[in-house]
Image (cartoon, rainbow, N blue to C red; front, side, top):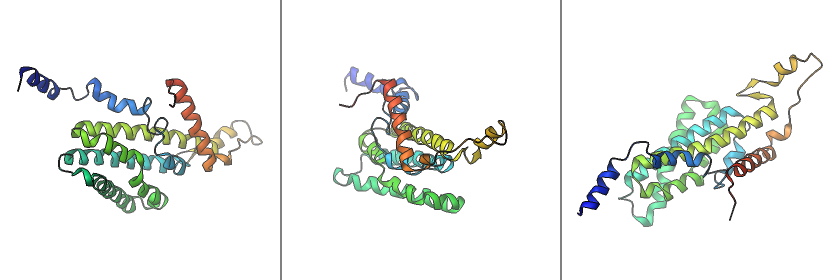
Length: 226
């Protein structure tokens, strides 16, 4: 091994836990390379589960757990997985993690399980999860894979939580089930009432809110489709 190669290996192994490169693994998916607004992945769940904040938060936590653990597992196994069966292995890992999440919800939050069981199951086919496994975890070390998965999951999570916030507020007049419109209306007298917008609790409302978020974000970052 040459002196230059040895020095490069030492430098690589001594990289800080949160070096500039590793920070970008977390920060880029939040805005500049967001999986929903830029990559346009995971749209179905962003429209389906975002009528209320509480189930959306549970969905976000579930996705964070699945992506991070799946990235870690595939990265640890990356040198032992034959290329021809890598997709099958990835699906098996994700399916196992999703089943675990589903069973935990069933055991400790049964009402939430009944509300989200179908959508939690669809995490298996979420393009964000499979995309990170294929594009990153298979070619990088476990710690970097964890950071990449965490960043992508956070980018997904804040978007669906933002959509849920506006849909619940405008459509139901509440946030996390706490009435917001009623106390405000009471300040202006008995004859005053803030009206909710029924469109916001429909998929059309989700499309509108998500479209506005994408428009604002892409205007801010200057991103243009090619």
